[in-house]
Length: 236
Image (tube, rainbow, N blue to C red; front, side, top):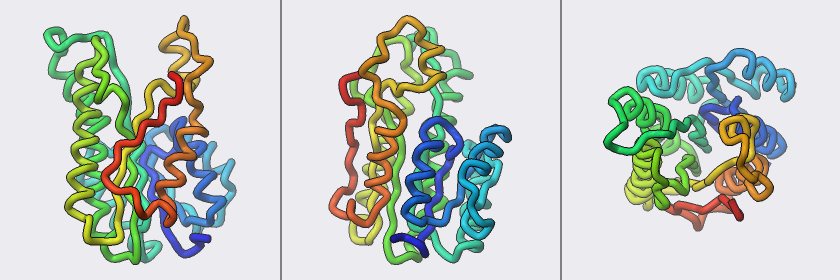
């Protein structure tokens, strides 16, 4: 049991975080979670019903590097260490090929998907190095390899996440810290169904199935996996 260990989950109140966080609770991690939508944070806090010394819940814009730095420092000061970092912040915007992608859309996809992961991992590394062992897990996408048309900015940002993960894994390979990415495709959430109302979602993986992969990567048992980009899209 990881009762003395600490897991940071950025974007932990989103669709994936809502099912991942209870998995980490069952393994007795102390938790530090970021959110943006207050109602989601309130609901998660009520659902978890944890003692104050086991849950640090903060509103943090993870596209702001200084805000992320402050959050990581507060987490380490509160709990004494950080062992696991799950970077879940992200977002999708499609409908544009490269020639039609404006600067605002491109920057937004880089901010949500790549810069958020970069800032999170960069801020966490010094604290992870101070712990006995560490795990870093980021969310990339199958789109980084398949590169579907009409979503160039998203594809580029998620490819950057994979490059970031592999770079960090190489830099930290002599430590007890592993760094990996998961590659979902379409995840069966209410938001995705609303975006793609006519799609056949029967084979879409559920958030709980994706979260189970993250949960394993966050465990000491995953120590032999480092620098991997792990498919997590089932038959979708």
